[in-house]
Image 1 (tube, rainbow, N blue to C red):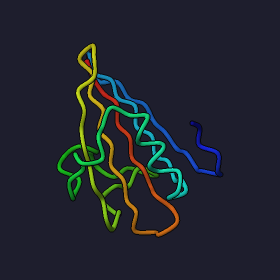
Image 2 (cartoon, one colour):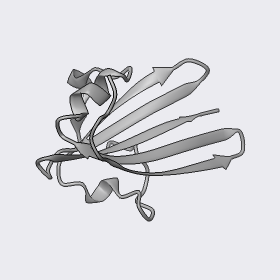
Image 3 (cartoon, rainbow, N blue to C red):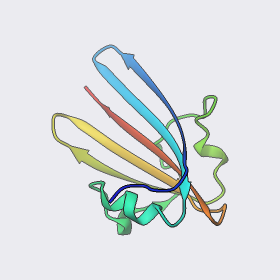
Image 4 (cartoon, rainbow, N blue to C red):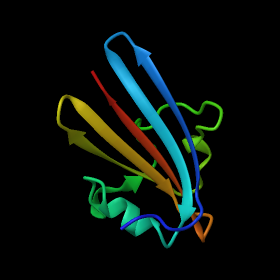
Length: 104
């Protein structure tokens, strides 16, 4: 399965000491969201309301704290990595997805 509809993506990377981080924000059709999520290691039942310290502070395009209906979840990945995903479905036909992959 692939995302077949138009979507908007912004991203950033950072490195502090041994830690690195990749943050991606994607705006996609609500129809595409379930298929996108199915390709991640996070089950939909794990999402909880709020930012919960998983996405970090707002910075330019990165604005999870402005989301009206943010839900977040986290998965541990191999090689000391963590995947955090947040999504906001308050815009109806558009889902805004915040993805953070970080580790040491």
